[in-house]
Amino acid sequence: RIFGEDTDEEEDGQMEDEDDSRLPGPQPAKDAIPGQADGPQRAVSSYRKENLPEPREHEIEFLVKDPKSYAQGKSIVSHSRTLHGSFSFRLLVFPMGTSSSVPPQLASFVEALPPDSCGDSKWAFESVKYMITVVNWKDYQKSVTQQDSFTFSRDSADRGWHKGFVKASNMTEESGWLNEKGELCLRASCSSRRAMLQHSSRKTAGFVGLKNHGATCYMNCLLQTLFCLGHFRHIAYCIAPPQPEESKPGVSSDATDSLSLEDDQPAQPLLVSLQNLFYRLQTSEVPVSCKELMRSFGWDTADAFMQHDAQELNRLLCDRLEEQMKGSAEDGEIKRLFEGEFENYIECVDVDYRSERKETFYDLQLNLRNEASKDIKSPGG
Image (cartoon, rainbow, N blue to C red; front, side, top):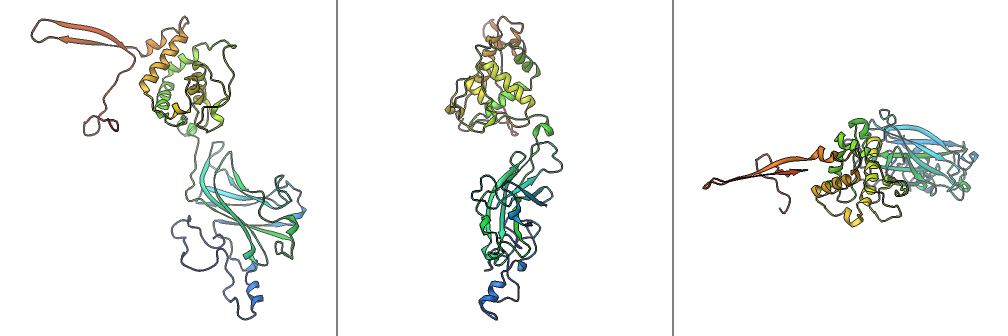
């Protein structure tokens, strides 16, 4: 349903009864009874465009004058409609189609407009259901409707169809696609009940996160912890990277959401990958990919879906960095930052003997307790 009736995604209180037997969309005039009075002619006339109800609050009606006068690729936009106070949309129409519309035919798209409060921030409206209909003026039962759902965003603000509506050769008054004024009628409807406005986390919180590439939450937690240690980040930036001939040029993995690590991009040295990751965490407006760093570990896609130990990964990472720092001005900085010392002390009860042994550590294992003061155990532990 689109014209004059609310979809099932409309707010409570706007729902129509679903047990009626009326035709989807517009209804004929109340005094028109098909099969009576003037017979079939009266029934056909009752479905003319003028018998359509006015557009509802979630609908747009747009008339295009002389559609054949437009060159292919030339577009026109309708007025806009705002739903639920934030999602605004309008129709983007190519009367003679886009370059992909062969033969020349109507192409139409729903275009989402940036919310006023966003400015240059990244925004998105998730799972918006949308519908576009070309109305036949003589018999709206012949109208052509296409519908789909899409996540509209700053980078993908419009969605629709290049073909499937009305061909240019059929745009005549006799066929009913044009009225006596030579106007083409389109209606569009959107349902945005589940739509959400997403601001950049950099703007609201000052930070962006890391993408999860399978089961990499433990690694993401460790990397973001190290990134937030200003001195560690300074150390990573200060270490000289390998010589240019040893460093292989690569392309950032942020361009794709694919989980696969098996592609043609070469693995960067660990230090270069870590520096690139920290740089993107400081400058990016969107969540950052870890695939470049994972390649530098020698991991494949299977490793990304395997839960590793965060403590072991931390030791591996620090050991590799310390190797890179040997002989440099930063040599020993990792040790000075993380190394602590504890003492093992043993004293016998029955004899006068005690033993003391000092040991160094880079990390400590702590038992976590819940609100009932009981140790928290991992599932199955």
